[in-house]
Length: 120
Image (tube, rainbow, N blue to C red; front, side, top):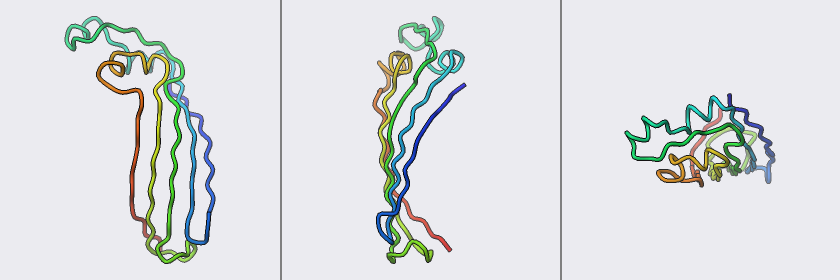
């Protein structure tokens, strides 16, 4: 089981632009942690990573910012708009300590994106 509390603040900053800021975290149970982050002795032999027995707990926390702009300056009339988004997530607990993250991965996760939207 994964439990992911989050809080988000969405607001227009002008007639043609909006901003959304979201902060979130993920908490996992022992079964989830074992399935995704444990390295079994057999897995250790196959991968060369040290064996690791993961327990549940807080898996990650992070924040995301989205900025949207309507190209004609009016969000209420539809049409073409663009958006930029960026985010950062930090792995925590056994999700960070597992050799899958510590040796082969990265505890810091970054997201960047851009897109177009058309409303009619």
